[in-house]
Length: 113
Image (cartoon, rainbow, N blue to C red):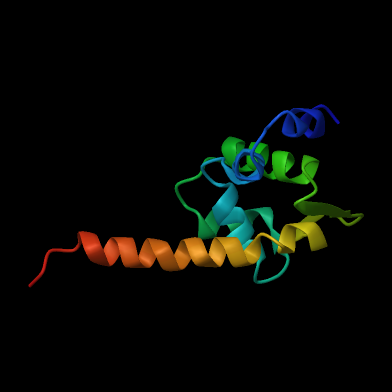
């Protein structure tokens, strides 16, 4: 609840959005979950440069902000899956536009030749 109150303190909706997805790995998490549910280690493999600790923290923040859900299945060994909420799926078009922009930017940086 403290997070939601803090978000209400922002004057600009863009500022609120960046507060929710502004973590270094949050956009990538949303991007990977846009394809469906994923387990923790699947996301680790998809993002090899993120540490386990950082991925855990970013997932918890996204869960707290109602962007994703975490489902623990009562199995041995335990199985945990992450999935975007309906609210979180609203971020997918934004993330896909960021992907397109990033591709164009990367092309701009390549030397002509």
